[in-house]
Image 1 (tube, rainbow, N blue to C red):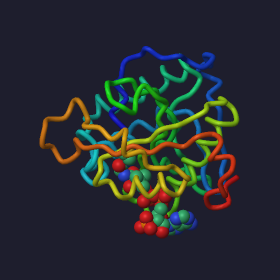
Image 2: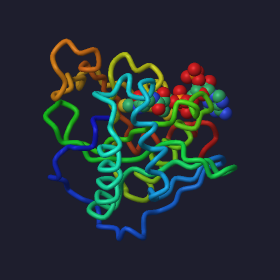
Image 3: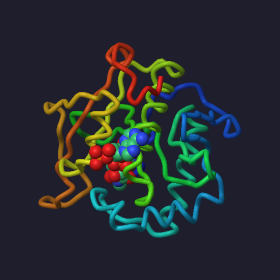
Length: 210
Ligand SMILES: CC(C)(COP(=O)(O)OP(=O)(O)OC[C@H]1O[C@@H](n2cnc3c(N)ncnc32)[C@H](O)[C@@H]1OP(=O)(O)O)[C@@H](O)C(=O)NCCC(=O)NCCS
């Protein structure tokens, strides 16, 4: 996903007080509101070149902290947002997953995007897919959304596999060039995937998660 700095012109879902950010539990994970103690591991993740390889840039500590602040503000404004992903077995902070309003100029937007970012040492366990499936379920069953989109750099195979695993379908007609990245930059070409409530409800549950 772009870096959550998109403008605020959104048809918001009912506002949710900050203390009412819902907690979602999956077999191995807890999706919950960001806390202050997440800020240090979140900043480490956002500065890791492996994690930011397909993102427009790494974040400084200040930029990462501002991102947490924006995440909490968006929840209050819109009633949806990005959750901190915590491993239930040991309480470790793994990253984020969730929903964000995107309205920069492209054939895929405006739209609500489902997205994810995990610490490098949390990759390869199916955690992103498990968290994404829970976020999609919230989007369709609680918010009543009709469709989610997701987009990523064309070369980001790991993220595209998460999209496949939760049942998203590529929409090549909506592919776009990321606007705030210079022409020729390898992360500029983006691919777009969609998931409708109807297809989600009809599909087999990813990993037996529903
Ligand atoms: C995108 C990202 C979250 C994907 O993480 P991931 O760990 O590859 O994805 P999942 O959590 O779904 O795990 C799936 C992998 O775990 C493996 N796995 C191991 N145990 C598993 C289990 N119990 N269940 C499911 N998968 C399991 C799968 O084989 C799969 O590996 P493969 O893709 O090599 O076949 C991660 O690469 C990331 O954070 N990247 C940086 C940020 C980023 O690019 N975000 C997206 C920007 S749009």
